[in-house]
Image (tube, rainbow, N blue to C red):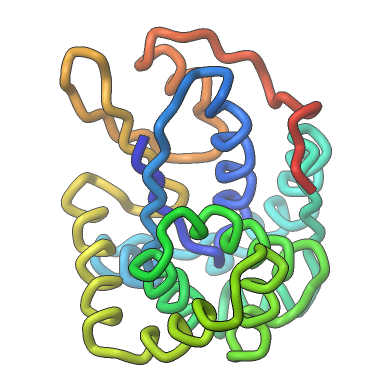
Length: 219
């Protein structure tokens, strides 16, 4: 499964954790593809749920709290999170993850987990260099690798790579985050959108969806 995501999206946090829980159960190979959600939405003409007041109220006040409990993912919304989601964005965050993928691909999962946790659980910054360094440290990365990624994230190469992955996602049909590209046994690529479609992903893979697997929660 290719997993396209932006730390900005709380539904991507849910999808990220549940996907990782199913890796051993479904014998999955997960290819993490950090992209820029704002770029996807601009390319496709999609609108943020925050632009529709009733939708935003439902998402923040009902849907996300329910899903957090159901999936056992520590997601708590507050004003700081909402401001980052709808106003500030995560350009530097996703550049850092892109740089980390270049430097140490096997670390992207845990660094992403720590960044999701900082934003949606402990309500800390995820954009400033010290914040990115702290997330990488919590993920167990060395100071040297982290410093190199912090330098690389400002390079034209990394910026271009992030744009390439974002454009790639749109070409595959993405219009939001999370987006899954499921590679089936017969060689097809099936696009699935949303953190609540794991039963469909299971069908496409020919395996049984076994629910939220709360006992495998990492945080």
